[in-house]
Amino acid sequence: MTRTNRTVLITGASSGIGRATALQLAKEGANLVLLARSDKALDTVRQECEARGGLALVTVADVGDVESLTAAFDAARQRFGPLDGVVHSATALAYGRFEDVPAEVFDASIHTTLTGTANVARAALQAFSHTGGGSLVVVGSMLGKISAPWMSSYVTAKWGVHGLVRTLQIEARSTPGIDISLVWPGGVDTPVYLQAGTYLRRNGRPPPPVDSPEKVARAVVRALKRPRRETSVGPANHLVVTAFRVAPAVFDRLVTPLMRIGGLSRGEVENSPGNVLAPLPEGEALHGRWGRHWMRGAALAGAAAGAAAVGRAHRQRS
Image 1 (cartoon, rainbow, N blue to C red):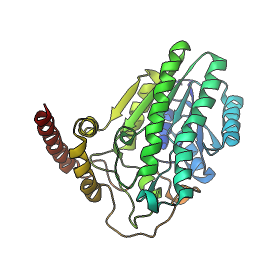
Image 2: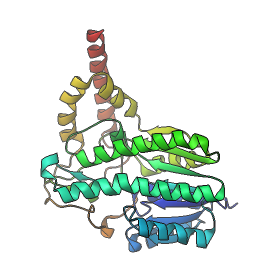
Image 3: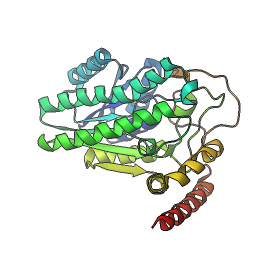
Image 4: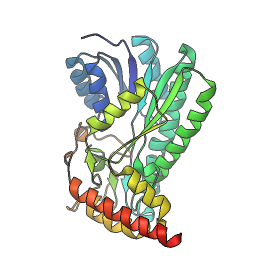
């Protein structure tokens, strides 16, 4: 194997999209800095990466904690030298009506997802400015462009993430060599839904159509090599965003029943903060339990029906 000699720091590397990105870069022989809150889960990922040909450093840190994040970036530089890229995928969310989610849990979710993104971006830009450049890829979400019931903390944070990334992209025009990209997936088969807090007595699940974390990781790696302002991953993403923007009244009527059908699990669970306040290492994994094609046909049919409704609503207004 020809080594790339690229050094990339990945947040949220213990699970889902972050883990899939680490494994894909490891196959290319990259030097990897794996960052998450659980050392046990990260050590498993390190072994997986090194078995695929990469070199990996475990850095236990919380993206919401500047001190631990700074220490992780320092450790990366000491081990591998300058960073060529940073992939930020760490996030936290809690399901429930806004007034039912405890303030502590809501605030912690916002802090991890939005303030954590700002912390990582700041550290990455400072590192790149000292070495002449680099590439930052932030994993956003379709929920950074639309809204959905029972996910107020995540929607609020991801809208902020998308706004922050867009601002940084504009500012980066005056700093040659520094590139910033946004990758925003729809439903992805990762453990994040089962790890999330819930105050609905039901777990969340990825809304169909569901893609694999490997598919999102491929888009992330492409963005590291060939930066783009944004990349959508998900066959229905643009239809859903169009419905939200063009026919909000239709969208608002449909989104709650569709979330009940496709966005929540069937079985009842105890309400809990999930991994919002503290990591749950036993739940960290590459995949969830929904499979890549879960309800794909039904989802595409629903998206087509929704698009037709949007079209009718738009014609009636014209």
